Image 1 (cartoon, rainbow, N blue to C red):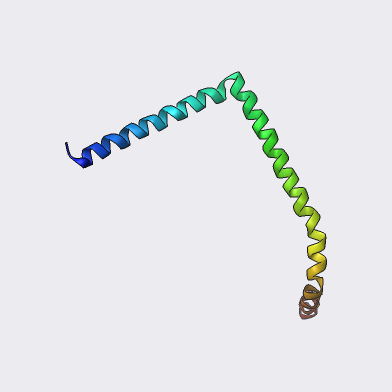
Image 2: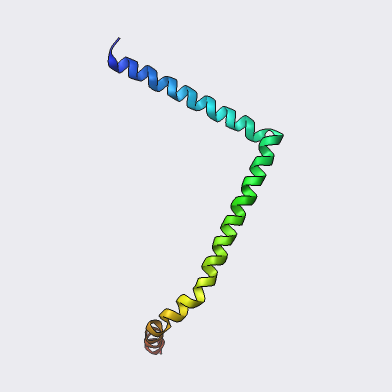
Length: 83
């Protein structure tokens, strides 16, 4: 046996374990307990995303006000060039 064949055997074994792990995860996800955890995780993720959207939306008026003086001349120039 060469080192290359040993490495190939190790990689094949790793791929086999990886596949078995995903089969386990799939079976768990389809079980009643897995569905419960999935729903809980999705609800938690939705809450995190909604909170972040609220935070970003709260900062937008301040950002608009901060850049309004820079944007107004550009808008006026655009409007006047359009006739």
